[in-house]
Amino acid sequence: MSKGSESPRSSVFTTMVFSKNRGVLLLKPHLNRMRDHATKLKIDGSAIAQQSIQNLLQNQPPKIDEGLVRIECSSTLQMKVSYRPFGIRNEYVDAVTVPSPLWPARIAGTKHGAWSAYHAAKLHANKAGADLALMIHEHSIVDGDRCTPLVMDEDGIIWFSDSPFSVESITLNALKSTLLAEGYHLQSGKLNERLVARCAELVAVGSGIGVVKIESIDGEAVGEDGMNLFSTCKSMIERIENDPNNWTGRWE
Image (tube, rainbow, N blue to C red; front, side, top):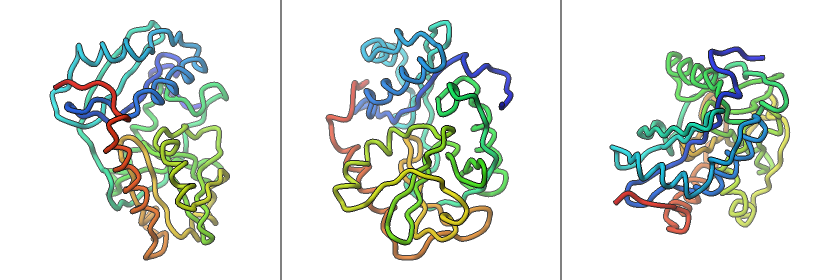
């Protein structure tokens, strides 16, 4: 089990895109996942309601025009809001690998209070001159430090991890139906070394990063030239962001 100063059951959280003049993006699925994770963490999720969250956001407005908002609910039902600007987003990146934190079954895959291993992975990537850390367990990618990796193989199948240590991606869920309609095939499985080394394209998606194209891992180039999964996902995310029905609340 991973160790940290906080218990994983001390809180549950989610991070969403916000814009002062549009509101919060995909609020409902974020809150649904947050409540589901609260149940797994044995946290009372009654405070995680759309109206109460909207009131909380209105009472604590952001000081920047757009970026990311983190909503956290503690085990004592205290709610916290914090805002930060975007970091890497919709660009080409380099990644490094780090061991995945390991948790018991009811903790694994949740956005819990002992998230320090993911922050440490992000700092490790920065110190190594990379943009992103990929979490590895049993020689397979199971997650990213703030994203969900997608590996497109030589046959055009898009693979995402089926590991219990992977966090369900709101962004991937929002993209799935359109990817299928565009003729892509999605498959969960092990993102092992062989699959990644021979992949046609490797991208990662998430609220914090939009979509990024991973061009190298630990200094080794991955993927082929001329692939369009990155550009396709980027266009899909733009469509999601341009749909006013996907935004809730606004500050001005």
